[in-house]
Length: 169
Image (tube, rainbow, N blue to C red):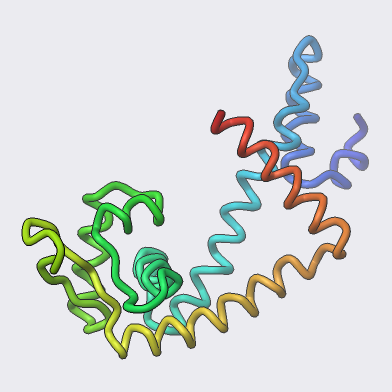
């Protein structure tokens, strides 16, 4: 590949071209998907976290508040359910909840049903905050996916779901 052609490639394309030059015996085509997804995930996270920050939230706090809010009234869950829905460890949930308690966005109390268990509940202040933050978050997501047309978004969502289900199987 000529130097001018390599400049026309994106970052991952240039890496693939370098590998092709150095190891033409290897099929590096998976890097075209996985490398680009990895880079895109990082960029998307930057874009999302910037909006959370406008509301004084980190990614973890946003996740806890959003999970409690979408659980519906009375906007409370056991820590184990929070861990399951936020896809992080129970230790990570504890740290996130602690930060939210300190800010007055959630409370932690003994469960009415099982006096050994705990319940994390959204406060009015937490509900107000996540409603405002989620509106901005959703507008940001629309902006980000708006870089693709409707058909491209639908195809990509379908392919990612299919790939995710296959990996989970």
